[in-house]
Length: 242
Image 1 (spheres, rainbow, N blue to C red):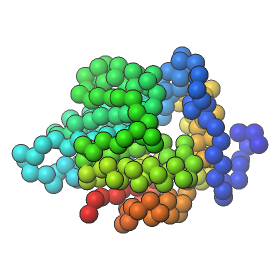
Image 2 (image 1 turned 135 degrees about the vertical axis):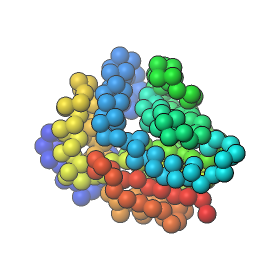
Image 3 (image 1 turned 90 degrees about the vertical axis):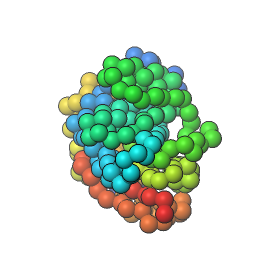
């Protein structure tokens, strides 16, 4: 089915995305990451995650150590760096790290941290295969879940919940007609990258619906999650350790 036609969205269709392919041209990869940075900025992706982080930080005593945050599958570091900047602006003590399977993405994130003068560090890791660190109070993941099949998505949720000391935040696309329309318009307006144009639509077709996310979280052992919609046609899953 052509990407620009309106696909049936009742059932998930997870198709290979260009950004996930091995051997992707580095220049095209970098161009796509720039496009995604612009989309993340316009959609205020970090702001959706920051409110529960700020609420947790404000409950800490004044002499508490900084909260440690990890952004898994961080890509070019946009969300991690925006969260670091928001914490700095609001006077919150937050130590930010990010990890990604792509060395090129990690190198770009490190360069962006230097450009923006932000204290954040990044490292290469496969979050589904490598041992999970247990030093982080908060673990976040943005726009990664839809890249996985359902079994791996459930495994990821369980692993991240086990590793997080206090708070787990998952944000991703919703598979809805409005979401598909926004992806179609937004990727064309905000990026010149053909990879972003194609992958943006594939991402919505491979995304989950709210009921599917709730069921996966329950099967992964994340009881009592707070699951809500946020702009633009995304969800935020919040799970706190009891």
